[in-house]
Image (cartoon, rainbow, N blue to C red; front, side, top):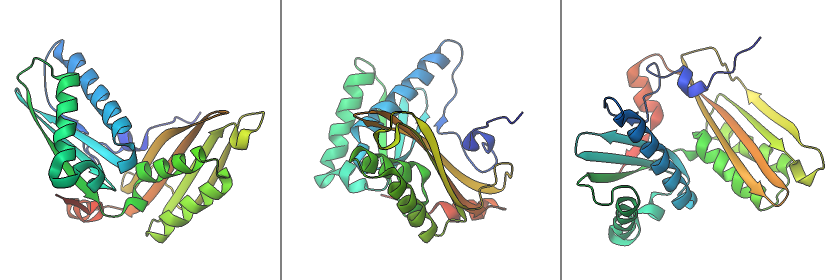
Length: 226
């Protein structure tokens, strides 16, 4: 029997770091964990057009730092930083009303969005929700990823594709996608496109090559901060 393991969780502490970095005791663990999930869900909906890659959350006793990686940071920042100020107000009213917690929001740009599985999957969602043919969407996504320099890519779609009566799964892949190699920098994303004939599940795997040193990992990420 094969065991399905999340590519990111499989490489935690080897090639990946935790998206939430804090430490609490007792009942506060469940409270902070739920809050992190709700904050990420809120930001993913509010900043959908910015094409988010990752949302990192760091906590201390009274401070919180939220780092957002996006392909279109200008959409979040707005004119003269007005977008960030508005976003801070919304987060404070929704999650920290009546609390003394201070938090900071950092926006970072993803230099090569075509090598981010999350961004590629979101672009596919936009195409599917516009009723573009699913095969063309899958092929175009694979072409963009390979042109950006990926070693391999695999795309999967599941549901009532093109409005068919019976749901099915379609997969396309090119290059190498090793699932058992800890050195391979595998990007993985799973999202859903909501259409008039139901939800379409989309999964994307991107192999960005092998990493042997921590320095190589820093160079491969290529994320510029603002």
